[in-house]
Amino acid sequence: MEIGIQFYTLREHCKNLDDFAETLKKVADIGYKNIQVSGVCDYEPEWLAENLKKNGLKCVLTHTPPAQLKEDVAKVCRGHEIIGCDYVGLGYYNFSTSNGPTYQDFYNEYADIIRAVKANGKKFMYHNHAKEFLKFDGKNVLEHLAEDFTADELGFIVDTFWVQAGGGDPAAWIEKFAGRAPVIHLKDYAFSDNFTQFGDNIAVVGEGNINFDRVFAAAEKSGVDYMLVEQDNCHGENEFDCITRSYNYLKSCGF
Image (cartoon, rainbow, N blue to C red; front, side, top):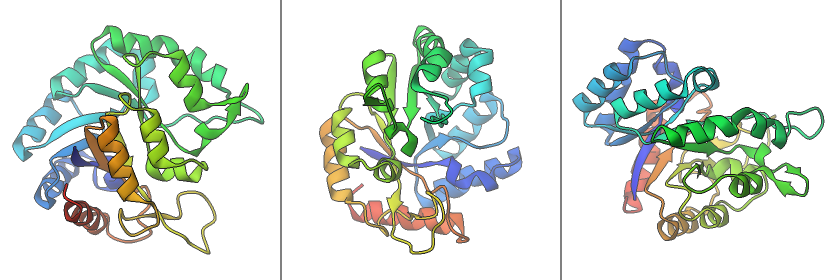
């Protein structure tokens, strides 16, 4: 397994192409070799391919804006081919049991897109938050997705923090999706007595309370290829300092 960095963590440093290019260099200098593109400025695939090569980086996954997926799936997949990326990810869907949208709404909105991604030679990857543990017709969203789409149509980006926030066991869900979760997000969960919403207690990997020994063992057993550090909220700390500490922790674990 290889480690990498989710660029959503660094979104404030990627608001234009010059800053994005500098951020790519900085993560390479820390030691990261793999990235996920998410939350960054607009870019042309050729530009990204050039800057990845310049810094010895590989893009293994994206979170692609829904508008782009709905406008032209084939174009999205061609762009992924240019940057050498196999996985087209969706970062968020706002499920609700009170006023919608429901799982059926998601299916109606994305089923054709998911299958079109496969038809264009790539794989659709779904990233969970806590809301995927809401239940519709007796099953949570992740269970519905696993049943309604085949393994070659849809994979899962298991996010350790959000599984825990939803009441699940991160290692158990990685094992549940064995063979369907080639990329996962490593995000730690720290106790805080003053957080007001989920996300306020996201921590540097290794500085919270998630049992990462079990996560790593489950990932190895289940065929995970890439484990990507993500920290949505660095709580006023420098983002590069945070991802460096996560990197150093993972290196100390043998990755």
